[in-house]
Length: 222
Image (cartoon, rainbow, N blue to C red; front, side):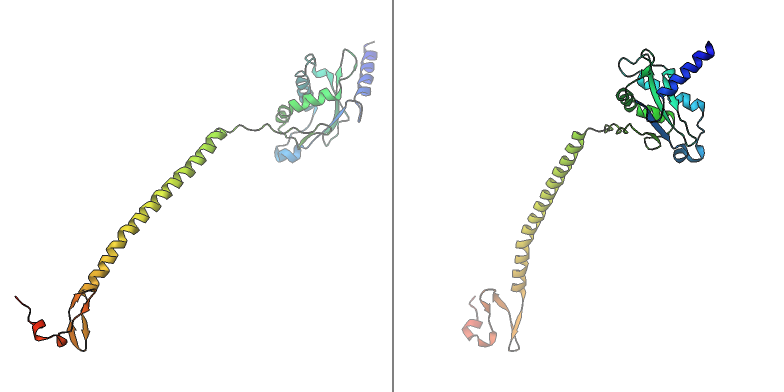
């Protein structure tokens, strides 16, 4: 009777877990590609771990908290590490709908990948699309970064305005002194006309030549 029951259970399981069967999923692993020389062999222990991870994922789904490892069936395991699996519902003796299994796998994809040191590219659930990694929260809030950038721009603009104002004041201060120096140079210049030294009397009035001065002009009154 025990042998009969065993064969009956095996036959039922064989009917439930088949390639392209209803609610069945194919899995393909690339252990050698992912780990290279550190690749491990896929054996019954690894299969047990996979079934345990699937059962763990199913227990996260509402109304599936009673899922056990024995409810996860594997079949058609190949040496290149590919196989099919289904999750059975023992109360009704049929497989759990693919939508529920897919939702459970997607929610716990990272946990399953980490258990085998693989990722979405080396541990493929062919009918289950890979989930995007959750966005990482920055250590510094975005508004602080934006405020810092704007504050730096304002500080730089103020510094440039101050520097330009200082340069304009320097130019204004240097202007009159240069004009005064030019006038002083004009006053101190001594010109020579017709070989006779001419001392400037007035920068605007020009120079007076002593050769053309009268006796009265040469003798200045005391």
